[in-house]
Length: 325
Image (cartoon, rainbow, N blue to C red; front, side, top):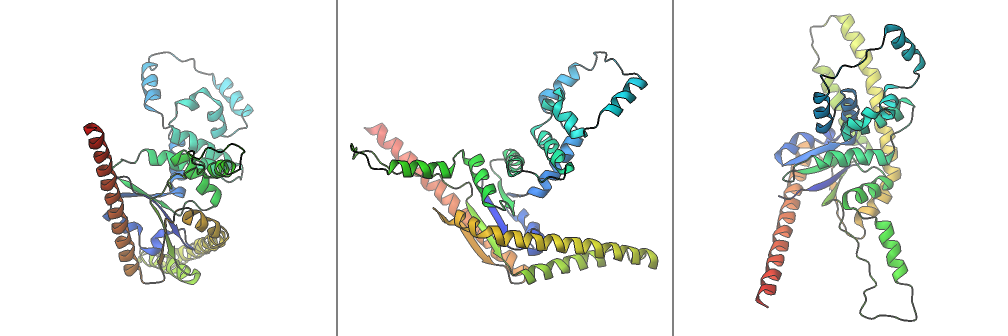
């Protein structure tokens, strides 16, 4: 199977577990990619000083070279004069280039977060594309809840296909401008590239159903805790869980609002010029929903394999025709 590419848009919820899908993704040769997890892994890679193979080889060669150690006074003075964060120091140093791309992106992400800023769309797309590069060609991938905005969709498509749909549209409009000398043999239509995704799946679920499912998940998590704790520990844990649950609900509500604001433009992007959007009613029990998603995956995988076979046969027929001429 060629690399199956899918954006899974989860209406009103960023937690795909609420729909029971993630646990069943192992049924297919597909890797689920969550941008939140990838950002955390990139930042952790930076903290782990994750270096590229070339940098590791260089470090091994320089092990025997003596390095001048700072005195305690020099070290203390250096510490006092440095007001920047670790991420800023590393980015400004020569050793930054020795880190893996993932670690470099993690350093840039942490620098923004520590300043109270959000991670830019360009940086998010770079983290995502870097992760996709390491997925085997025989294994597909699913983007969980990404892109979330039209700008992210545009940046991601350009990064994965090398084409900018807006520029192609602009060139197409320019070519339609009438001129005095018209070459009838020249096509004025500029073809648009194929989408970066094979298909986009929208699990369409109401706000209430999404929140209820999250409540069930949180209740199940609380009930699974050790029942042998003393009453004080359990009360304290319950109070902490209440605060965490409220924070989670607030995050979900925030994402619901963000989804509703951005989805109309995303829906248009995924349906024009080619319709790759598949809508599934997710207001059903989780078991039935999982089955519907599995069936949809199998259908799309078969379609992709059939297209690949047809393309191969067409290429073979053309080569055979050329060889006989």
